[in-house]
Length: 394
Picture 1 (cartoon, one colour):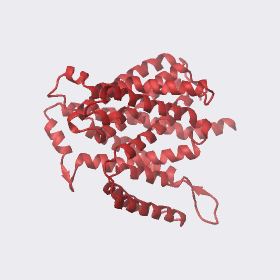
Picture 2 (tube, helix red, strand yellow):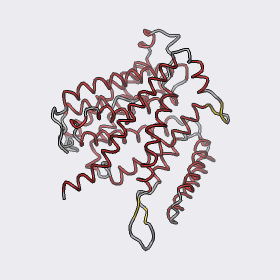
Picture 3 (tube, one colour):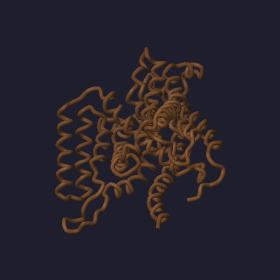
Picture 4 (tube, one colour):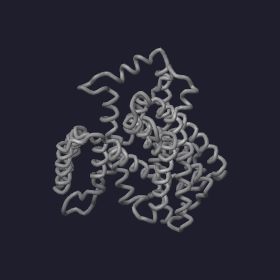
């Protein structure tokens, strides 16, 4: 009986983790393809294509502000599920991943600012704060059954809190002009959403239309439009009664995550990576790149700041008895996990596009790509030696 219950609990987690592992490979291929094309004879075609005007906005703008809303919608739903019924549903469960995530945001930002307190790059402090869940889980999954499930779940919870932190940073620090009419319109739409839920409306198309209108209002308001996706995700009901007389429930949230996750993992994130990872290296030398403070701040924020922040804050919470290490996990594995947290990529590229002017954004992108690669390699080597040699029995 106990084994069957454990399997029921573990199955959806393992399914999710497997999906992230495979999508990480596709994401990496999209990023490499963008780098190759941006430095080939097709470079001008690539950049002109991304600048193509569609209804007054560039194609890249539509990808970053439009298509990525669906990505943030899924993040919003995952956040809600974790806080209501998952690994973040109680203070005892949430303490360690939350502490690790906070440390993994504060220390990288501080490392970045050491190199960029003066000059035009100071606004990029939020770039090395985020973890790319697809890449991080993908790398961890390469070790197969050597990885304790508790370590995978901890990384997943840490990355989700990390995403929440990145969303707050975008909303608070990278919103430059606010039109309150747009915010008021969005609030009215969200009121309609909650009212429809209370009235028992279950039509997905109806909510999709309201979601598009809410996105338009948030876009007009000046707050980054992807925040609408997060809020709509948080507003999605975890459970819904089938009828007043029938007590059984179904989960719109689980159903939507199940529908959208393949599209996000295998289409939206690779498209975003292809549109944003293209770095033209022509016109400046390698020595110029490695000495630039933005490049150094991002790279060292990811490679040094991330693992230092994750492990240091985790250690403090464990030493003070405010939290405990997950069962079967040791500090060597936590250090390896800390380096995997330094694989920033998707969210780091997203924040980079908001935080820095185009003239220096290229140095941020090189820092993200090389920093994520170095962090992934170091983390993989540490985990290779730190994880148990024998496969862990299910």
